[in-house]
Image 1: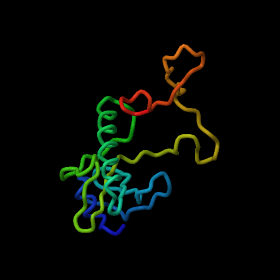
Image 2: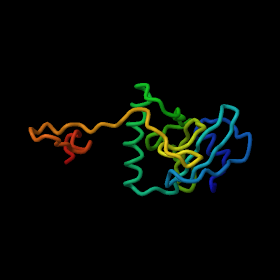
Image 3: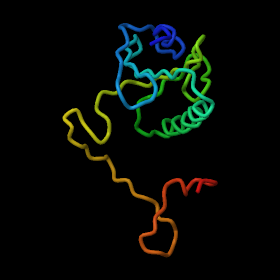
Image 4: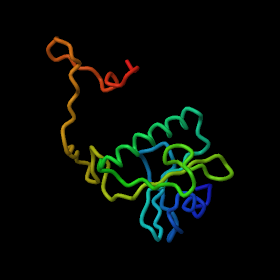
Length: 150
């Protein structure tokens, strides 16, 4: 972690770290770390100097994540940065152009797999939306339900 863990925790309002950060592999293009502070355990992600398109995606996904969290969608609680977030829940770190964010640490395994390698069942089946056509079995992707996206 190039930026010091103390500075990252301060920028994200997590409190002082109690232990050295532990690297977490997989699941993200960002560097991921498990960090324990006086306020709890956190998944901390750090992105080095994101491109303009990445910053845009960070802002858009932040709006979506905030709306989902506020609507009560079960998910790890995102940490609200101590300083104003520059992109969604991502706070710009001083100095090197990096951004960091955190969410509450949740013990478990990723969907679709487990520590034993056996697949897990989804909590509810996903059903594609009907396309509105009179053709039987006609379906279209979720992007068709977003105005301006074809």
